[in-house]
Length: 109
Image (cartoon, rainbow, N blue to C red):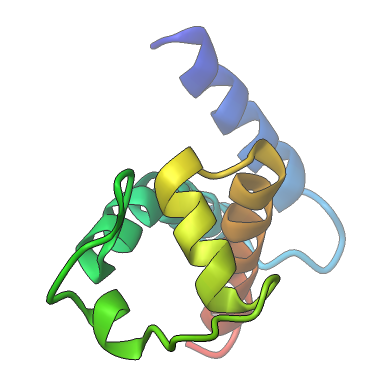
């Protein structure tokens, strides 16, 4: 087992022992989904048409792009992430939100 996998397992075990935390399986699922979301985000952006060369012609992004796209809008941020890649803080936020939603959802299953 790699040191990274060992560290992730240690973190999952640590979280699963906190009071109020459901269990190890739920924590591992939440961490797994969070990690998968971070890995999948660039592919999802590219699939929607936000490529490193800009908005792809004929894509979903091209269909929803307006002549006046406001700076700071979700479209502008997606276009920036497609061209430049996602910042570490954005990756952390995507992983945390996806993992958090998965964990909360697991409480109701």
